[in-house]
Length: 305
Image (tube, rainbow, N blue to C red; front, side):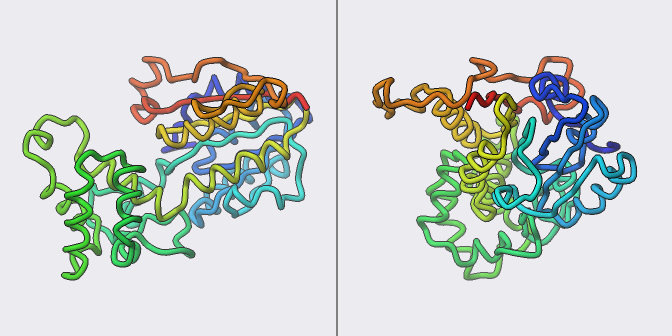
């Protein structure tokens, strides 16, 4: 689809292996890139999910191309257990913010232009980033900036946000980006390849959309909707997303799901097999064509029982 380049496209198709007559679920429709690749690869049916109201317009174009082989539901993927469709031959997640959402400056995901500080995946529900910053506790701000953004300078930033919100200075993307810059040491500002606001915007976005909680609920719901022999693929762009995927996939494969997992082997049930022992990353040519793919990580499991 024009304007949208699906990441790890060939690797995703390889593991989903679409077949004629199959039923597939794209839990993060976004721009429709992955959904249309699956529909082009086989005479199959794809169900697409997205909570973003803008995705409805993009889904209409996919429906025009593929007719009743494509079904769209406007919903958060954490609700996929309520779908009438299924079980599925393959399920795909592509986490994080879509390129369309980043490009729509008025959504407030990016600091490339002046816009209201919103950041909601679904702007019709929940709390905007501006409202969240105006009311969040120190503990909530710390979790977003220290833990989700993995920002070393978190103490100074949290203090600055708490001081600024009484002065009505956190309503736009530019105001927040300037505040972050003002807290960033000069040596970091002039040497870092990343804009200092990048990670902080990401951490706040993760917090207000409960992105990690939604993944923790959505992945098991998807696995329950998967046919035996079906593949579940998940593409992450952030280490915290990938950690949830890795640990769940390892648990389903009967392996330790972290350093704290001391269960004996006979207490581990093997429900799936890891399709790849190592995470799959984009190659040099894809990164050159689509820089966003640099941070993409694909993991896949196949359901055994």
